[in-house]
Image 1 (cartoon, rainbow, N blue to C red):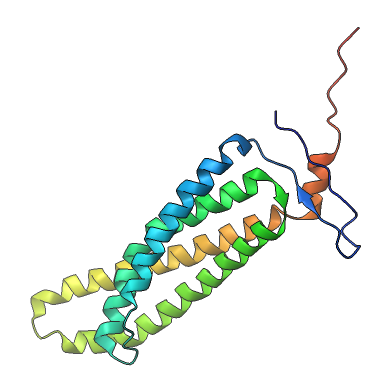
Image 2 (image 1 turned 180 degrees about the vertical axis):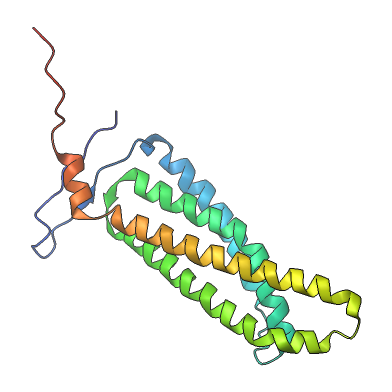
Length: 186
């Protein structure tokens, strides 16, 4: 079992460091961090390049970019989750897990904003389709993009809340409490 880290200070003094206990994945935390960073950088670079150069106001560009972004976010998301697990698994300062929780909350807002912008362009996309045989494909693309964005938004929100709660003082205190295992007979 991993060594427990005791909370330093009571968290009320200025400059007191609140440490989290390492979890059972502590031996793999470095591997999770490195692998997650690689996946996150590659995945989010792919998403960022879709948005460059920006052509906000161009309905075709917005529609296509948001659709492609929702397709490309999987790799970056897995990378961020691995990094968050690695950070939380190592224990230590509670600032890093909280920073990642805030990042997940920002990504939730990003997905909701993308859904709104995407929904504003749906009517125009149907007007641009002149071939009736292309309409089912457009409907599938709309459904897929809105479904993916919804799932990502909910997933990011849940991940952010779980990560934030994992750093609460109550969880840290429970981890430092002595175990109530019976003593071995002498």
